[in-house]
Length: 313
Image 1: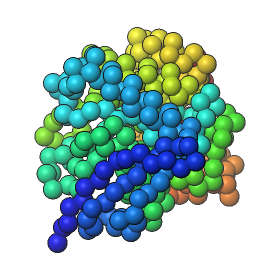
Image 2 (image 1 turned 180 degrees about the vertical axis):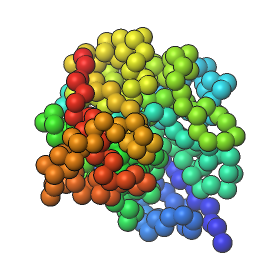
Image 3 (image 1 turned 30 degrees about the vertical axis):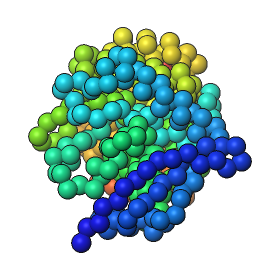
């Protein structure tokens, strides 16, 4: 039997900070068990919540002024989410990781329990909410946050390698590492289709998200940004992002998925084998061995490719 759950976000004060309280009015039995339901859950520190609150307000303002409170006609009818900003993320010193776009084709299944994250004010910070309610206490090696390349571990592993290479804060545990960075999708809207998710590549559809991206870059001021190559190749978008966060170093790379590593990165095989040996016994090696749906040996090709990409300011 399925019981429904209403999730309400509310402010809670603790030593001057504002956090999220999740009030769960009925137990839910579905894909996941959330044992702490029924008790208020406190999350976050003052800095993180200040950044999240600032971003939510900016996103609301942009959505109203530039979109008239409506997503584009071609998109799923949902408001854009701010990035998941880690508790220990530090503006000017942090890593921002962009995936491409949300796969929302599952919305065609009206019984999917994830629908609750797209209702009311939940929608504005849905990656954080999914992390807290599904990912934080799950037994999966990588936390679920509602961004597939993060759920599967690929972008987190790429992020750990990048943070280590550029001397940024990093942790040995994926959940702890997540709290030092910010992650999100570059595209704030997803193409609505009856089948699988469609990639957004054309400049017209990409531009619909640009104002939100500029706003989050101005607030987060990341030291390094890992960004999809399909976005970075557009000079108009490059210029806007560099102007929004001029001190940031941008690292453009293809998507981290099985097709890319298996079919397009074969030229990196020799370097990949060497890197795998070099990182043996270190946290990154363990993370790579726990990737979901990607051959571990081939996945090292992505790290080899990433190691050779120059950053751009």
